[in-house]
Amino acid sequence: MNSLCTSLGRKALFSLEPEDAHAFTLATLNTLYATGISRLVFPQPKVQAVQLMGLTFPNRIGLAAGADKNGECINGFGALGFGFLELGGVTPRPQPGNDKPRVFRLPQVNGLINRLGFNNHGVQALVQNLSRFRSSGGYQGVIGVNLGKNKDTPNEKALDDYRLCYEQLYSFIDFATINVSSPNTQGLRALQETEELRIILSGMKAAQARLADQHGKYVPLSVKIAPDLTELQLEAIAQLAIAERIDAITATNTTTGRETVADLLYGQESGGLSGAPLFSRSNQIIRNLAKLLDGALPIIGVGGVMSGADAKLKLDCGASLVQFYTGLIYRGPQLVTESIKSCSSM
Image 1 (cartoon, helix red, strand yellow):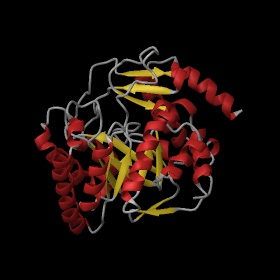
Image 2 (cartoon, rainbow, N blue to C red):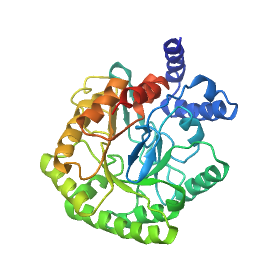
Image 3 (cartoon, rainbow, N blue to C red):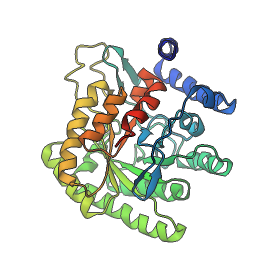
């Protein structure tokens, strides 16, 4: 019955344009939570909590960035059973993102291409939504935020954007992710180069120390990397993350590669490819990264999870936590429960 409902729901949502379907999903999840239906239809398996980065995660499964950019559906997504949610990406100032159409489904391979471009309402809108959420209770899991830079901010001033968002959000969040790997903001991935990244990580760690003293709590920092890095680039990032005492690495963002989808409708659209076609590439980055880090800091694995077995494989590759978003689009809420159960024995 659950699979039939999921199939019918997906068919209805896929009859809409991707961004319209997304907006409808957020509204529906909020309604299900507000009416109490979520507690009846989304079972919450009881598993052992996980301690990482000084935080307690109710389970290892999280919602990846991009699903709730503005913090408008925290309780709605939380009710699906996620142990943690990553909101954003957020930028200091509101921005509309790239021109539409900018999201393309590849249903033959359970994939998605997006070139959204950090469309969001800006950090102050997210602060207001988080403030309301924190004062009213509800979801009890871990809340992170994905930090971006505005499109018109030059790379040499990117640190200012990341730091401003982190400062504004610090008292409302449990961790933050520095996004230097989205392919949809021109030039952003250049920030993964060693010297550019050193400036950002060093500056963010200095801000972290100051804010921890000011607020009396420590908010860990992760850095999100691309799946398209060379072995030398990955090694340099791993060494730098350890040297700068970053708290985690999130691997990976979407890919610009098109080897597996080039012949499909929309397969050649520009942007980041996510979903099942990303799975193997992301896993290889996680394996290599785990060897380079050798336990020095945890990995948050993301990219192509479509089943509980996929989520478990992320852990087997070396991740400590797992995130997904595109998988939720194709599999529905059952993917959350399935993944929690598959990863609960670790």
